[in-house]
Length: 205
Image (cartoon, rainbow, N blue to C red; front, side, top):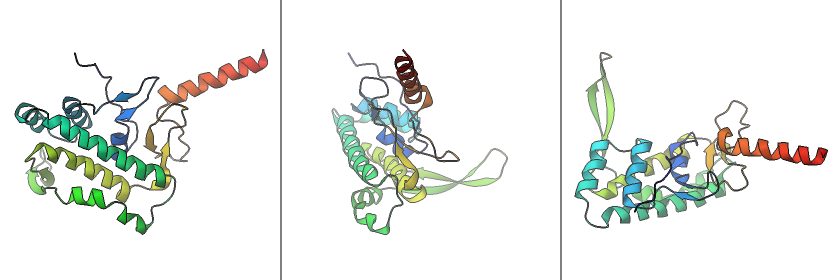
């Protein structure tokens, strides 16, 4: 019987970092949201990184073990990118890191994205990004794009790790004063407040 996973957490303010947080310890027990092919499809659906029709079609048509193999590739990609992010977080990215990003560039080169012009509910004609989803491996492409967006569009100076003692989550601090410390005030922030309160109470006693 499949283990029931909690809903995925999207707290990073950057999808490429949310991908890294698809394995995390939000409370006490580590949770792996990409543990199987079915889990991987569910996470992509929650992240809105692939159309529901595409995910349903691959769920129906993929061969035995095929989606599990793609999920394993996604986990490998995730840990490779985590290493890059952890090494460079908190500082601007120099041009020289492009050599480290070669694996991501190779994956991006396989993309079959294109633009279509579509009607926009009475607001005229707009461009819409589309993608040819030829094989289950193409499900890795929106992940690659999300990671590239973090590298190219966001300031690595504001990429941080949650200060929760057991937390492994990363996030982009978009707050005005860049003083964010926690993945979530409801999770790690609240725990820290409770711990500080207990500490003050013990010292006072």
